Length: 258
Image (tube, rainbow, N blue to C red; front, side, top):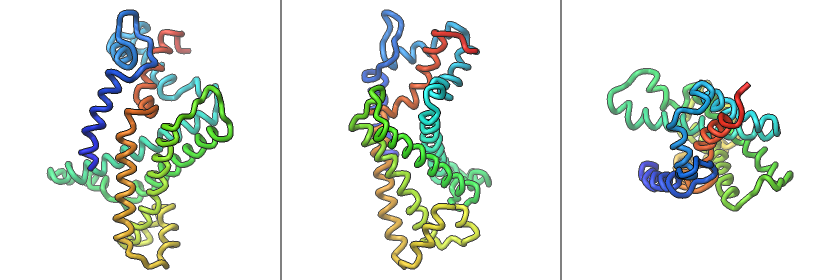
């Protein structure tokens, strides 16, 4: 399903890069928007590659301007980014191991471990990244609701994207709990899912058809993920990819890095 969804996502992303994106002022006579940004990135930076890389780290990735502006906004931003990207990378690695690397005969222990949901380190990492994403999302949502700022416009698309991220993240915990119950994972392994396992213990007395519940909740989880995947190149979330590059290019031309 995600492979099929990748086709319109690729087309929409290409459209974003070639027609819809703006925000970066290219040189006179050059394309504007992200096309101009990518063109500028292919040139040798005016201050040299070393200076550009320092700005990419400090201004594009670590967002030092946001740190000086608001510590709470900086923490919320990085919690969301780290949680979301971390979970996406883990899901991609698990899918790659399951459907590509292992079928090709690459049965190394490290590759096999990527698809082991109850591998202690990966189980705890999944839970931790999910909590980080939830806390960052709640902080950002409360800031928009309680501390409205004229410099922080909120649109319907923002609520749609935030709602999808919240739904995907929050559904992951009962989904994990249902999997633990369905597969009857031993407690000595299940306890590393430090949110899903206590929730599974609370659900156990219900004696439901765990496989059926897991199946349908998983379908909803995947549909929500596909919807967010398709929406990604249409909304503000695309700045997660182009923002660091634009910030680094802009900062390297404004002032030298200390």
